[in-house]
Every structure is written in C-alpha cells, then in structure tokens.
Length: 457
Ligand SMILES: Cc1ncc(COP(=O)(O)O)c(C=O)c1O
Image 1 (cartoon, rainbow, N blue to C red):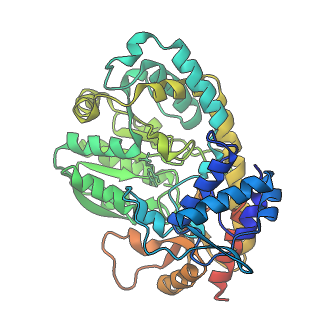
Image 2: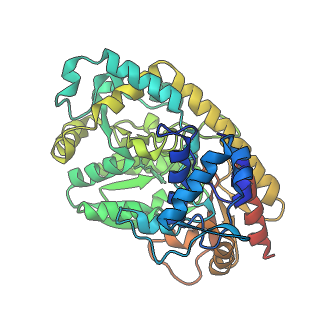
C-alpha cells in the first residue's frame, strides 16, 4: 500500500504495514486503532473520506468503509452526517501493556535521539538470513550453548570489526550480548562495585545501569576534544563514546586517546569503548576504534541497534584476555547466552555481505538527512557533532522555552540538560536532535517544524 499521501493528509505516521498478513482491512483497522490508542491520532481529528482513503491506499472503497465502520462500532471513531468520520474522545486509554504510557504521548514528529529509522530495517535480507540460518543449523543449535555466543557469529564479527572498525577481535575474545546495555551491566558486575568514570554529559540511562549493577558513577568532563582524560583518577574503569561522543558529538582527539590509554595502562584500569554509531561517519574515513591502539586495556562494545534496529537486542563485546572468563561467567548467570537463531541470522547477514550493503545504504541515507538538516538550519544555528552518527547538538539560549514551543507543534527533541550528572545553573544549553529516527517521508516536514520552532515563529 502506498500510504504517503495518507500521512500528509492526516499528518501522522500510521505505521501501516504493506499488505499485512492479516489482510488489508484488518491491517488498516489495526493501524488506526493503534494510532488512536497511542495518541498519534488525537480526539477530534477528521479522517479522510473513504473514497480518498481508498484511492491513496490502493484499496477498495468498501474495504476502507468496512474498517471505519468497525472502529466506529468499537468506539474509537465517530461518524456523523455532515461532519464525516472523526477520532472519538476516549476517556484514557490504558492498554495495560508495558510502554503504553510512553506511547500515549507519542509526538507527531519525533526528533529525539536514540533510534535509527526502523522503517529502513532490511526485512527481506533478514528473512533470507533467518531462513538460511534455520535451514543449515545443526540440531544442537537448539540446545544450550557457549555463554560467549555462537562461534559462527563471533567469527563473522571478528572479520567485520577488523575491516570496518580496526578492532583486533579474535573470536575467542568476543562475547555476544543482548545489546550494548547488557555488556555494560556485565562489565560493571565483574568490576564488583568499583568506581566507574562516565562522560559528563552522557546518557543518564547508562549511569543508572551501572548503579543498578552495583557500580558507583564518577563524572568526567567532556570538552571540544573529547573526554578530559587528564582528570581521571583512581577509578577502575571509564566508559567513553570515542568515535562520536554522546550527546555532544565530538570525536576523541589523538592526544586524548593516548592520554586515556596511558592512564589505563599505568593504573591497570579498563576503558569501556561504546561504539554505538561508529559505522556512520560522513565526511572522511571512519575514525578507527580506540581498541585497536590498546587491545589489552579496552573492552570494545558494539551493537546492531543503530545499523539494524534496537528490537533485535544484539550486541557484542571484544574483551581484553584477562576479562573473557569472568564476563562469560557473568553472562551465563545472567541468561545462559543470547538467543541463538538471531545470532546465526546475523552471522549469515555479515558473511553474505548483505550487512555491509545495508550499512552503506543507511550511511548514504543518514548523510543526506544530515545535509538537509545543515541546509535548513546551518547558516543560522551552531550545529555540533554533524560529522558522524545520527544526532547533532544545536546550541540554544533557553532549552525550556524552545522545548515548550516544540511540544506545542507536536515535535519531540532531546534536551542537553537531561544529560548532565548534576544539573545546575549556568550549564550550556542545547537540543539533541536525532535525525535518524523519523520515517523517510516524515523527515522533511519534521525539519520544517524544527526550523519554525527554532526561529520562534
Ligand atoms: C550512547 C549509546 N550507547 C549505546 C546505545 C545502544 O544500546 P543498545 O545496544 O543496548 O540498544 C545507544 C542507543 O541508543 C546509545 O545512545
């Protein structure tokens, strides 16, 4: 189904799946029901007439009418002679599902950082990889396995990380995890209550993960050259986003890289390298991972969350030799190992080069989006961190004021202020703009709204 015009007609992304398995009418009903429930279609919104809807979606008018009738019968929509079909005023829809409250506030335009364009998930390639994985997996693959993960995936990643990120990654030092976040949790547990230095500003959720796992968090400041390695002290570990600092977007400079690895060598400390968006660099060659300089001091952590999608919960760690057994032990006691079939599918995707092709296509797409962002705002605004990744930092004088205007326009943005270890007066103010998140068709309009909000119009 071509839903582009419908998006522009109603002004929301309905997440309507093309020819969903349940059929067109059921698919349309579900998409509308979900959009009403989670607030993307606000009470009172007028829906297009069935003739127009049918034309735009390439379905029969009867199917469109049947879907509307069903939702009227269920109470999600109202139909009145003369005023067409509208979204009903529902008391408060609490589906009881996890995340329902968050979805209930779903914005019209989502420029918050954190997720890629999940609409770009390579479903056909993933399905082929899954099919092949299942067709060729030995029956033992369905039994408990190595807590470090499947050897097929560790071998595939060993080659991929070497050529794409300059990581020295023998398969026996790789542990497959449920995303980056599990790797961080496992390392914290292995460090057993130690002090962990974390970038300030940085992602609050990751600080919570360290604390939940018994670590104590120590802030270390970040400036325009990256994390201030000279300010590290007796901590047992430091977590860094070296390629593209989150959220400031700065790249860790060579002298800081040296200072950091010297600090780790001298004090026997660990550098945890969070390489969450290292594949996406736009203006020149990717900056290689820090791990390549000091494989004995760095635990390198990568993830499929930005390249494929966070839902897969697939991540990987490349560990210094002395940590492999302890982390594998922690992994075993956490969940035995990461789910096997997904691991085999990712190995297939990498080995067939479909992963590289997908990452290349995404890089072009996000680069184009980055360029559009620069075209729209760059001449009037200071944008930082635009050489890489899926987000940029926009300087503003007053976060609160701009965010209030954005909310009124249905636009969600990240706030620099949420990332400080200790919020306070006099901190630099900024917006964290995640340009990867919106669906492709919605992005230009999201940029227009952002420009309007920033101009104070
Ligand atoms: C700074 C940072 N690190 C890591 C990740 C990836 O986390 P995970 O692999 O657990 O999805 C993200 C995702 O948003 C992130 O923003």
